[in-house]
Image (cartoon, rainbow, N blue to C red):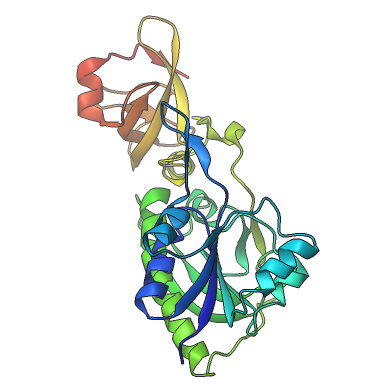
Length: 307
């Protein structure tokens, strides 16, 4: 059975899922995405990755500011979809939207629910030092990631894996998982189980104020902080290169042996003392410059002190 699908998504994470659905042969009758935003030097309006992909396949794209109200609901119902697939869309779906497709709205969420409900599950899992996460297909209800689960796929988190690397891995795994879920739905064999009541943790949106590195924390926590915010927004510290404080992003690190006053530069390999142990910075980015490996960074700059 070929399904009529409305796809709702916006960022890079969502695009492989849409591509997989198109490749599976389902009829994507409409795509909903956030509106194009100014980008680049000329600040021209740039469509989201999902929007751009839909344009390539001549799929109608809708970019409403809100889905609330009778007009938005009527437009959505007019697609006469069997199911809506929602992947990092960015707008709240009111009940009128959730109930419109014949089989409801399926969401792909990047965690093992009920752990890390909310906006930033990938970053929060790494920042917390989790060794495992995954993706889940759930049926959406009016709560925040509270709906029943249909399918799940676990993914290991390596000790030095960054949020960017985990993001890409989960996106690929999630595309396959949603494809299998839709195949089951087309055979009327997709079943759902309520989420456990225990173990609920919320993955709150990353606040820019969280980005500054606190060297007084243990090395393992500093390391998790760095990789959990890499590549965006990027954990940072301030360093003096002889011209006053300058912000530097730490994009990749590893935990090493070492001791000293928190924030002290222990050697010429960018080993920095933490509250307990030390981290070695592997990849960094100065303001206005591209990311570079530590060896290249040190060739062009000598840090006098950092904070």
